[in-house]
Amino acid sequence: MTFPFIFNPLWKDSVPLFDGGIYDNFPVTPMVEAFHPDFIFGSAVAGTEVKPSENPYNQLETMIMQKTDYEVPKEEGMMIKFSFPNVSLLDFQRADELMEIGYKRTLSLIDSIKQRVPREITVAEVNERRKEYKESLPPLIFQNIYVTGVNDAQKRYIEAQLHRDINGEFSMEEFKLAYFKMLTYSKIREIMPHAVYNQKEKKFDLYLDVKMKEEISVGFGGNISSHQANQLFLGLGYQTLSQFATDLNANFQVGNSFDGVLLNSRFYLQTRIPTYINVDGVFSNKKYQQSQSLFYEDMVPTFIKQRELYVRAKLGFPFLNRAKAEIGAAYGRLTDHYLQTTNISLNTSYFDKNTYDLFVGTLNIERNSLDTKQYAIEGCMQYLTAQYVTGKKYRPATTYTDNSFREETHS
Image 1 (cartoon, rainbow, N blue to C red):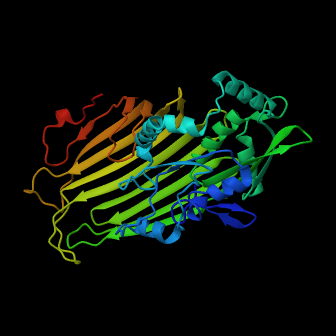
Image 2 (tube, helix red, strand yellow):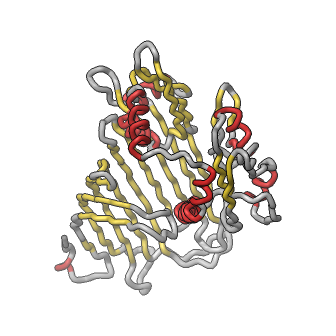
């Protein structure tokens, strides 16, 4: 199913192949010429009248789709026609509803169908013919693999994801596991598999056409404000695929009231069970102050400052069939500097200081069956986490005179 600007085409011999429905959405003539059927049963769920629409996609569909004759000659078969004016090409969520309508309509016409098609075959005979046909097929076992669209290091990484048996072979189920595992890595944009039977070896050869994404990404932004919230942002990303699949990202922010840096790295391991290691770190500095400036400085001194440092490492892997588990450890330090009164000499006074040391061990189990990422109407998300946090220290400055409570620790 490919459609311009919606679904990418398939390429065959340097020619893009689009959905045949664009040219002929009811291909009775090609069917007759290719298969010579005894009887054609047609179901038309698209009308020939196209109403004007303000929807850009509907306009595109109207321009591209060729006029189609939704008819089956009476001497060659029969038709059932449906009218769904409020259903579009991409309304996949209504598939069950529409199929049920088609099923009931066909049952209501079953007597007419039997008059046109009197020949009957028992279910046992059909099942036997299907069994014989399936047994005649060669088993879908792969041996040779050919990867295009990548360099040698990337090719070795992709081949390493396919775990072969002692004969150097792998099954379709093994390929499916590796296929979805590789697509979870953000550097691989698309994998187009193609199986070709090898008459000599009596096995299938697997051809993989792989499309990669750009390795380096840069993001730049900011905020220009009449207050002190002016801010600049720079984001850098680097993806590499060689011995390991690796994502590296860095975000930098600079401004009057907030400075910060975030570093993140994820390494996808070459293990039979999809596993990754994620390491990230954050450092930020916030300043709370008052100002009436418009692109010039007239700010009063800062009364509150907060600094945050956080470093975390996680090991992620599947949990049963529908969940993800993560085991991690982290360390953080939160430091608050503040003045508790304005009735002091700002030039000679020191800040009171609170320090929070965070030592965190985590075990997360997450299961998500929501039907959409945003505004879900079906499914649920279950998240279980355990962590331990310890440490709080207080050091007073010149505004505090009692020295007996200089430090106190909580867990």
